[in-house]
Amino acid sequence: MYVGDRPAGGAKRRVSAVGKLVVPGVIDGHVHFRSPGHPHKEDWGSGSRAAASGGVTTVLDMPNTNPPTLTRVEWEQKRRLAAEQSRVNFGIWVGASAGRNAEINELMDSGDACGIKVFMGASTGPLLVDDATLVALFEQTRGLIGVHAEEEGVLVPFRQRYEGHTAPNHNAVRPPVAAVVAVTRLLELVEAHLRPVHICHLSTAAEVELVAASRSRSAGAGGRDLPVSTEVCPHHLFLAADQPSGFGRLMPDGTSSSAGNWIKVNPPVRDEADRLAMWAAVHRNRVDTVGSDHAPHTEDEKGLPYWRAPSGIPGVETTLPLLLTAVRQGRLTLERVVELCSAEPARVFGLKGKGAIREGADADLVVLDPQHLEAGFEPGRLHRGDLLTRVGWSPFEGMPMVAKPDAVYVLGRLVAAKGQIVDDDVRGTLTRPGE
Image (cartoon, rainbow, N blue to C red; front, side, top):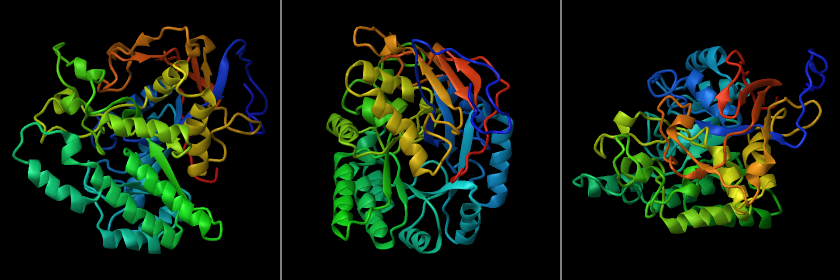
């Protein structure tokens, strides 16, 4: 496999891909590998194995671990864990917090952190920011800002409204209006400061229209490009709160049940109308990237009563198989999958050696069987035995899904084949913007 002008020189081994499709490795810009702090849910070893098995060769890990990644000390702690354990390449977000902008700039100016993560609404971890802190971030920091856009001021009264209900609809507790208000405010700041911003996990038609309108206004103001990019998650494409889901038909004890806590995630899985709107946004090039928002919790934790059950679902290893299933169904082209999962994430995060197959690029490659993408091919269904995530479950269990890739290479080394790790000694490297 060719490794360009690297010191290793030319190929040490030749691999035949005759009759196969070769695409760039997936860059998942949004994972929570739970380490440090919660290794019973996931760590860099288990999470990266799951990623590699599903064709993900680079992950960017979010800061809401324990301790949260807010300073150089915490960033270095996470980097060491990842360097020791990760079978795929990795980047590390730094979290936004009041009064820490100088520390954020040190990590951003050095090129170490891949972005600054902001939580406008309370989610997992202690990283909620208020509007004054958000404005200060735009004014005082540098580099890409990634945002969980749900407005806390909207969420609080809705939580209070439903606190007496034992099993409320999560989409009602955290309604679409919270996302709409947050994105509206966020776009005001982007237009005013022209800071690059990545809006994570768009989930509603209204958010998509707000971003499109803001981009149009920017184009009309002297033709300047609005520095905003967007992400959609597989669960907002393939699951709906008012429709049966794959996991909703199967509980861990084998009994039948509604989806309930198993699809509880922030922002919530929305209703079918919003799910269809997200597909329309994908087709109209109104979203830029797909990120899994891989956020695993154990079955025991998800089985708790609603108000105690944590939000978040696993997904890093099913993203590509789900999208390839959509290709087989004629709902998506393979070229668009590569844009969403490889080329555009590389552009958004400034990863120059990633996201493409070309001379001099990193040899992060995924080999696919083209027969799996043909309309007449009948895919299997996802079983928990197919999963490598430590928590061992998926909201997509039971759904038709194309098999995991035939082969996955990280920096030219074969790490996974047909969903299994074949070389557990492979280690990825730190991926930094500009490299």
